[in-house]
Length: 382
Ligand code: SF4
Image (cartoon, rainbow, N blue to C red; front, side, top):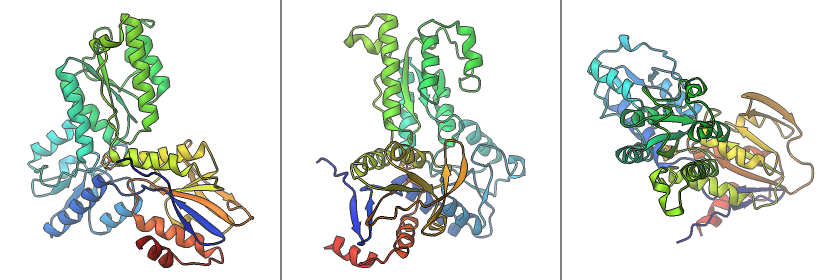
């Protein structure tokens, strides 16, 4: 059955909220949070560590820290607590993004069992499996992802274990890679251009002859598709392939986005059909999937990226995040004067629904609304 991606209208009279059809928590995040809280319950008196942030949401991470959980690394992989200080009696939770084989080995060597409290999302594991399938057919892997993101580092590690692997962040880097594939650039330059992004022993002359693309599960679907299509064309041109010969040099991987990323992104496209005044996107500022929802909205209308209702300082002032240059901004008069005001709202996969609800409640408090959230909930329940 075709899914419905039209937004839900919450009509408060002078304020009209168009809520994305799919938004917020995904299976992987719910599962990870469940396991993390169960771990705390099951291990009273033990030191409990998270490899890094559970998910990219400050409220969830703060909640876990309040219950005594400590982070071993920050979100960029910098060590906060040294591995040498861990003992086999400690508990370490692997986050939803998964982790690298090197870190798994380190924990195993200490004697910390990692399988019991491993919250790696099955959709991330699916990407690792896809990489393995490609590797078995002697393709190298091109990972489309953010090189410093935990998930991309984990995927790179798992792919690099089985086949030559390189990471590209965007189309500009893909075009650069294509020049090495096509032989337009001397292979020697590859190692400087992709420093820190290729697997050990990568041979830029040999290992770029057969490739397949996998992606960080939360990238923009249209970007991954464009990158895969582009590289396929590069191979077709270089090796003069006919349409049914492409698999000689390019593995047909359907994109490896997860269902939640797909649904949340497609719902934003559905939401953008509405002629609204502005969009509000709720989520952690280091959340990859949330920033992509912001990116889509920004193309059409003024968009404010916030972590919660506290950023709606007043009816005239909003504090929000510019993820392009990683700065926090304060904007005045973000709400138009003429009513009804039409606002699109969505949230990232690591954002609890309660945060979205409190944002809507705060917006309602700025207007003489003619109905309540409870009334609207009843209507939706009918
Ligand atoms: S966004 Fe997708 S891959 Fe990431 S945790 Fe959620 S379901 Fe898993």
